[in-house]
Length: 190
Image (tube, rainbow, N blue to C red; front, side, top):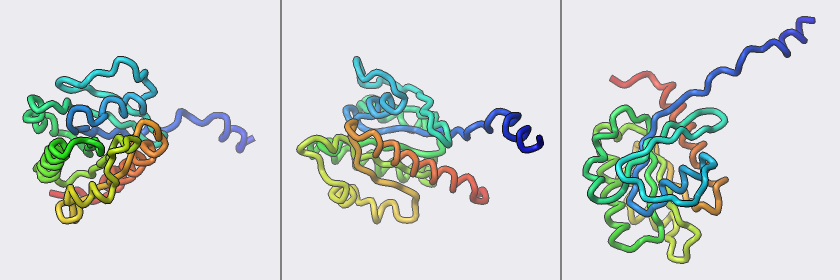
């Protein structure tokens, strides 16, 4: 009787932890498309984000409240106003973009990695559009973005991705959730 009662009368499952993330990257890098796909939303009529949008992205072991910031150059100068309260960062880059855009993306990532409100947070860097012929490899991006010297001692993940392989995208987010969980277990830094 006791075993049966324990099985059938369990209360609701414990609430999943929620994490507040900021998602940044240049216009056209694919932020909106990736997040919409993760939320199982329609891919039709997706337009570039002006300002910001917030999506709750559900995973089995956590809910990610992602604040996606528009990537146009007129908006990027205001990104830092939206960093406060973030527990992690998603940076999406177009790995098939022009040299100029890649240079701009590198500069934006560098300033985010060094920003006082973000510099201690875990970063998930997604090299999107890997399905395009001009896409650079993760190794090329790691070298070009100088991630090894710049992000040494920081928690960051660099993963290739495309809308064609959402399993890989979900795996990348799962790795980020592990970093967020680890960070929560640390004694708080004063």
